[in-house]
Length: 318
Image (cartoon, rainbow, N blue to C red; front, side, top):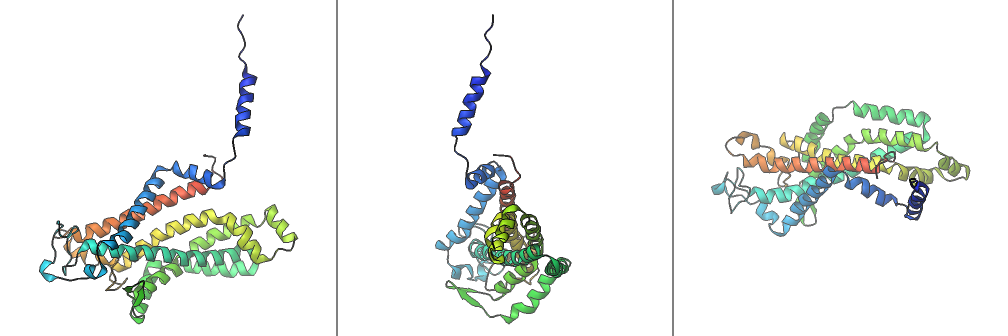
């Protein structure tokens, strides 16, 4: 006679283990989901390396050297003396990519901050109060969405760039066009985020804990910024991450057309301004700054995809 398998004891043992296992915190759960996204991990590593390259490289080459011209060494190919070769006026491309990367990353981050601030404000007010406020703000948002961003960026950059003098930040003299590019990109990129925030607010404001907060007399500003906004942070983080990549790409577009950041400030975008003339004869003029733009854009997009999956509350993956 065969002995039956003791299934109840096994299941009870599993239940004890599950009960005794400590619950995962939100941070641990997010990290577990994120590390399963291999491309996001790769993107994060590449982004860290590019940041170290741009800001750490300043310890090895000076900004004065990056702007030093020597026409006797113009259009020199990559060598031991000039790792990435020289440009049309003899400037070292390696040094210029180091300092150009700092400005490109600065533009991406600060433009994304402007975008997030405006998008959250308009989306939160429209979603929480509704009614006429929602109608007016959303019609304004739709009008901004219908405007061609790249064309608007080119026109406004051309109009304002020459009217702001150079500025000095942390010992570096930057062209006033940097400020113009940052604010123009930020002021034209917020509508998508505003619609996302509005949708989140419309959904969350009807939940029980928000209704309870209203019933207890909690001020509207406290409900918006302390209760609803923290519960909407996931799509905002993802949108902000992708906004950095979008700002870097937009700056590269307008700088390539000669209407972006002006000299003496270098960016990865304006290093490509005249490179198209030497596509075959001097590949290093476009290859290195172009490759850096591609790498940082892809790494940020991969990182954004990973954050979207990790912060998704509907995901069952652990």
